[in-house]
Image (cartoon, rainbow, N blue to C red; front, side, top):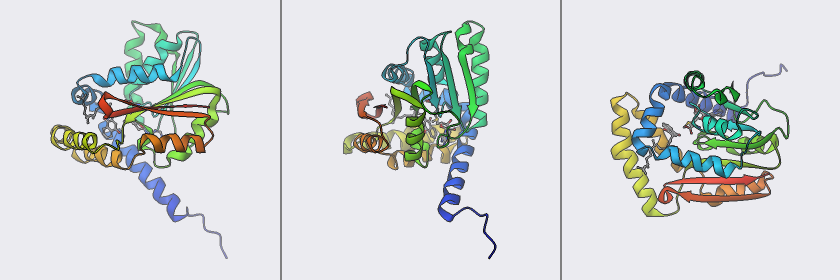
Length: 249
Ligand SMILES: C/C(=C\Cc1cc(O)c2ccccc2c1O)CCC[C@H](C)CCC[C@H](C)CCCC(C)C
Ligand SMILES: C[S@@+](CC[C@H](N)C(=O)[O-])C[C@H]1O[C@@H](n2cnc3c(N)ncnc32)[C@H](O)[C@@H]1O
């Protein structure tokens, strides 16, 4: 009997799902930064600063930003680790990485520290780095979008040094009916209608369904301990609309 080289059905579905998401993030890349500022009234910048603090990144460190997108967290990490440090930023969307690289070129004109960032196109579930490489890692609004989140956590655990921290910023999948009603209302009545002006209706509708399909803080803590992190704690921020999860290798 000839051996089939086709992927098993579930693996093929995962691959197709990931490719669809990659395309979605490619499509939103040109307006992504602007819409985040508009919809969060600029607050996402503050949440990202907090997430960097939670990562424990410091001067001279070698750090990883997974699902870096257009690079907001990578730029903050870059300032934190300074010219003696190194930021490795990874994403699977070519368009997002192009935006990130162009922002880096622009910012490096006034602050050479940003030259310490290196961009990689790659998959969060298959990180192309050796074990125990990084002093800290971040993933902002990324883990929710990864189909096999356990695999991504296993990978991030593997590439962190013992004692290093992972900081995961994202929407909070709240257990409070009030908070999830507010999230749903804002997404249905503000975010999706405005995104529609840019021809991005389905892309921003996806945002709501991805929050429903995400993990609660308690579920994130449980999963991180399962994959080998020694400590895991989820913090609600922005009145419970957002969350930051911290896990220590
Ligand atoms: C920076 C933010 C989200 C990034 C983001 C993440 C995704 O997974 C996406 C998927 C598909 C399309 C877009 C995104 C995406 O932009 C968080 C803030 C921006 C949000 C788009 C809007 C948040 C609305 C909140 C429910 C209410 C905000 C309250 C605020 C204090 C005014
Ligand atoms: C919502 S954006 C967040 C970007 C950035 N971290 C921020 O906070 O603005 C999510 C990013 O995750 C990336 N992404 C989603 N799944 C991924 C995967 N499996 N591997 C690599 N990148 C992924 C997308 O391409 C997108 O750029």
